Length: 151
Figure 1 (cartoon, rainbow, N blue to C red):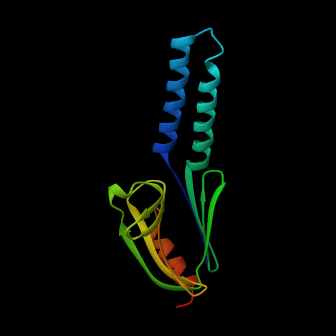
Figure 2: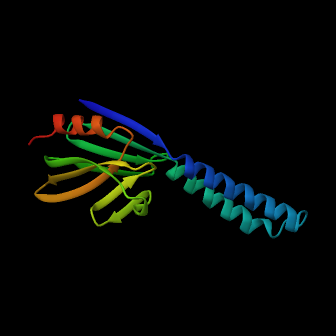
Figure 3: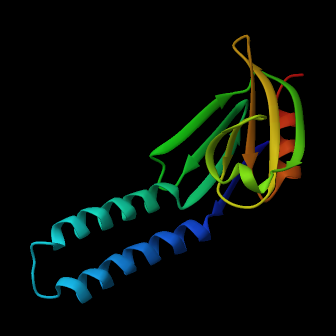
């Protein structure tokens, strides 16, 4: 079975858009016709646009025994070879864990928004790992992973 699902981080998109708009307005009101102070504003705005492109969505894909996670345009992409699935559990992620790529007491968290995640405990090449993958469809992801992996 194959699985592919993307979630858009509307909060990230709106936040970065508002920050860039604020920077442009602040520059226009403060320095208007003077081009010299524009360089730091342009640099910061460019960084925000690049970060926004890197983080605006999370795509979760399962092919065979490989779980792949892509953030944004794909510059941040993670690959997990899941040889043996020990356990999967649908969990509710506490608000204070945040979103994005996080180290938590329950393992690594990969999410873009929302409070649902699939906690995956697996062995890969003899080592045990635990990750939490945020998804709008944790039941389907769990079903696909359990179908594709050896127990």
